Image (cartoon, rainbow, N blue to C red; front, side, top):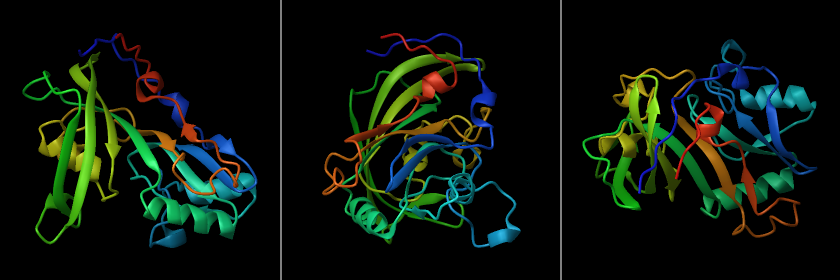
Length: 241
């Protein structure tokens, strides 16, 4: 059954500091909490691009070379993992490319036409990314998302839905597109039809990376699960069951 929450009060100061928040670090890997509006890795513009970049900032912060192993959209917040040496980078690429890492996201969306949803929804399609947006196309690639509505929440501009999302594929804009095409655009995501404001980026956050199925993860000193602050807690919501 869907729960309710108190009124949301945004706290932008938590994620605007230029020093990145490190959630895990050892000699082989480092994981950070990516702020909204930051690139994961440098763009094609290189030094001419003045946007904040997690990869560059983290290298400067740690005074070490890093290798990215996955990315988050500029507007998205949450866990971002980097390798600190070539063997770790090779192993992590194998895990992510082989879909051995299970990712969990949280999103806040429009309520849609109905809030009486199934406990678990399976969304699959064949999709591809255009210049800006993703769309269904027979020339695209298979996509699969498992989506669960967690709570009906009250925000400053009205009701919304809190979701837990597990992408089983890693298509560009997969979660944003899947939610929007089913009538639940993510709050703040103007590209996919949201007309509601959001204090930083869009209301989509990577909160957990499950590494338990990754061979040799323990050899690199990684825990079975990497986790960070939940989306409701980040923006000051207390979800009631």
